[in-house]
Length: 103
Image (tube, rainbow, N blue to C red):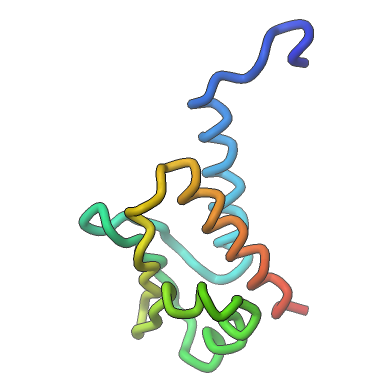
């Protein structure tokens, strides 16, 4: 497609990645993803702590400290140091690792 129409614009590519992130989040049990104070991302969920612990077990140690569970939500801290496209990639990678806990 890029030969005939040129490459995808950056905003279109980013939109496709956001949709990929939302699909992964839905499979993991997160109902909503929203930014909070430009520093954190909040993942709203109805899952209980034991279910979260199963998902978080697949995260590497350096990412486990960024994800903080509280009833009804998981807060992802420390993403403000990255640019928007890197934030998306980090979340997609983390969700991909969490999917290993789901049979």
